[in-house]
Image (cartoon, rainbow, N blue to C red; front, side):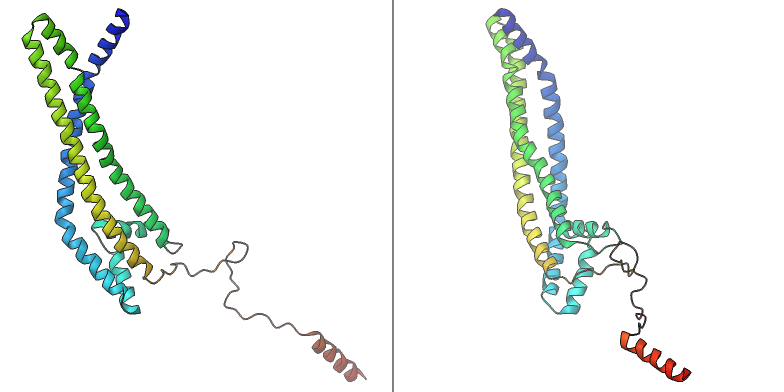
Amino acid sequence: MDTLRNCLYLFSNALLAPTLVIVILLAGWTLVLFGGLLREWLTRPAIRRTLLQLRNRACAGEAEREAARHQLFSSKIGLPGRFATMQRQWPREAAPDYNKCLEDLESEIAVSLSKLTWITRIGPMLGLMGTLIPLGPALTGLASGDIATLSSNLVVAFTTTVTGVFIGCAGFTMGLIRRNWYNRDISDVEYIVARLPPCQQTSTQHIGPEGLPDISRGRKPPVVPSQGSSHGGAAENSLASV
């Protein structure tokens, strides 16, 4: 029993250093994501103006819809910019599929939000680990009367707890804000795309039924004489010979 207890004690103490390193890295990553959120917040007015213009044009006549399509494909910021990037990456031999691009855009949004969800979940967990692991040496120091060991381990435990809770709170807040932004923007993009005129293929070559270029398309079919006309021609030839 003592052997198992010592093994668990050594294993838990060995996890302390990796846990503290990961908590520090997560705290730095959280600050980086917060900077990205702040930058995106500064561009939100421009994104909303662009989507409002596109929505108004998409509800107008055919010429305005075509102008809205060109404006959407030339966007640079926000979800309209991502959608335009997916359109430009589409093969030039075929017309872009709006539905497929929307599905890819939603997948990208889900991936970006899953990172914040992971931070929200894993931050407090690591903070709890960083709290409980130093308590063992702290209690050992308390039992032996070593106040210095007790105080140093308690400081590590409390600071790790605070850092983990901060990571969880920051990740949850950023995820909530981004989710509200993206839900509103993707709804507008879907509405705009549904009212846009379809793209035309860049290639004008027609493909035959067997996958080969149909070079006969656009030509007049050869004139095949009917059966009656062939008999008539034969009768005239026979009369001429007589």
